[in-house]
Length: 375
Ligand SMILES: [Zn+2]
Image 1 (cartoon, rainbow, N blue to C red):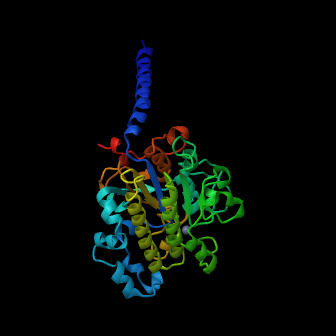
Image 2: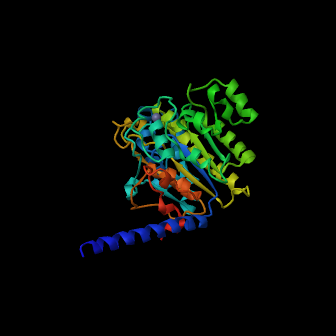
């Protein structure tokens, strides 16, 4: 007699599991998304995404701002809503009206990275593999031992050779382990990755050859957007990574003016990619954009420049999503917490695949951005 409730419970469990297994593919088949772009602005803070420019940092003293009046005219407004719209006009028109934005900690929406390091390689690894890896502690250029959702999907029916990686940092060929994944990449940086190089437009290649670089390990965001739009037109990838890096560089350099300018540019790049996608039959009304950062930064007068395990709030992040399966709920408030470990499975779910089942350590998909999960 004592066994009966247990037996009943386990039978119920079996039936429930069967229902869930049958239900997931049926639900995936209903999604309209056929393409996903993951777009990252390295180290861009949730504070500016939701509050716009910060007044006390728009100064010579704290933000090394060269032209304070010009900067204020461009990005200072009286309310957080008007400030953020001035800084990120695409985010706060199109995405706010047709998509969702998570991460405004002042309104009960918290997005965090779960890797304890709160720096870039551990952050990108968490985003693309679905979990933090304690072995990845630094930004050292070592080939990533973990399978990522891009290479995993590149092996799925309908996605083969339709996955691409573009990112301005020289660690990306290692983070995506191009030696093993064979994903097409730009720039490829080193000859050992050359077999998988994406061809850039001639003007971009000429600029890279002729221009004196500002950084030894990073190229310009403007070159990335031009290569990405060219690649989308030529090859029409179904899954694309676009990693912009200047927001992090200018913050580390303490230049709040250039940090804001770089973020404003990324907003414009997202708009250009979105408008290009809506102009092409392969993408129109069938493409979801997920936009985020790889880590947060400090929120103080000097530690806004930095981020790591010792800088409070470096784990605080944000997430913006726009696409045909995402309910248009705009800025989210009072949500359950979300983590960057959920992004890989969310990308796969949007494309009808179950990464979370294949890699149980990974976070579960974010149901709130998949129409059939939201009430
Ligand atoms: Zn950084």
